[in-house]
Length: 263
Image (cartoon, rainbow, N blue to C red):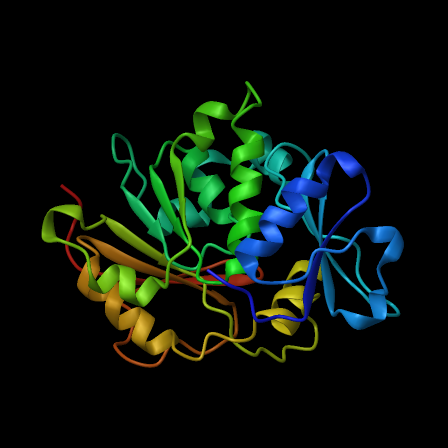
């Protein structure tokens, strides 16, 4: 995979120079030591340090760095106090007593929803077509493998740097997932919504999912039991087949496309 963004890999400590050069080669971007770097030449920096990877947008009034962290912060709080299978995402994906579906998260992003589903016992394949986001995501999963309290959870997560439509369309019948989960990125102008720094980053660097209708179509052909689409609460449905029903929360909505009942 390569990355077409205006990006450079950098490092603070000389111990991470070689990994930064290897990653830059993989993404086909420059690798420049931080001390000799002119930040104005790049829209963002991928920094390699002792904690893994972090992405920093440059320029004035920039948000703080973003890294995939399954160990601490909001993700850890949700793992401990999120409500288990009572969460809307669990209900939307069909988790029930004795039912833990095999799920493909076809728009994995920073992996937070996939981590919730893995925490609840589901095996999840995470597909991410952005080379940059995939590196952040895969690094977060690899860092978490060494943490005893969550290593069992992340063993249920498999990251793939793939185009979701191509990957879903190429599945053999015996490899089809129970559920395909989608959270496509659309322009959304609800003025009361607070946009997190990660979403601002994604919108500016990755862009919108203009092929969401094609992705939904591929998901409907790949899933055995249902497709779940996460949307902002007041946003329109994805173009195409209307959902079977909705589950609505305070800020988001899950559109469920039911194909058949779980065994």
